Image (tube, rainbow, N blue to C red; front, side, top):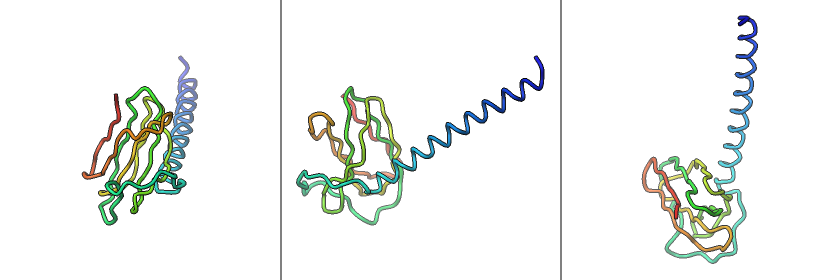
Length: 131
């Protein structure tokens, strides 16, 4: 094989990988911006047992949807109100920059049923919702 052809193929593949990485980084920035509380507040009344606490150390969590249905993610504010973050499709996953003491709510996107609450307690935690 011509060495010049190998260099061209390598450059093309490298270019494609760099473009893919740029797209993934842009999506990651978009999701993290949404997860920082820029989403609208929902109408569900707050539950006094579930609210975020200020002052915790920053950390990262991964939320995976291991169920067969879409799930809606909410960050619970300091007064327990839901802030819409986004929806995860079955098999979807998002890495979230958050803080120790923050609360998250997982809701079935179709029925509106609260599936679980997540309180961040450790510096690195993987939170999984599954059936």
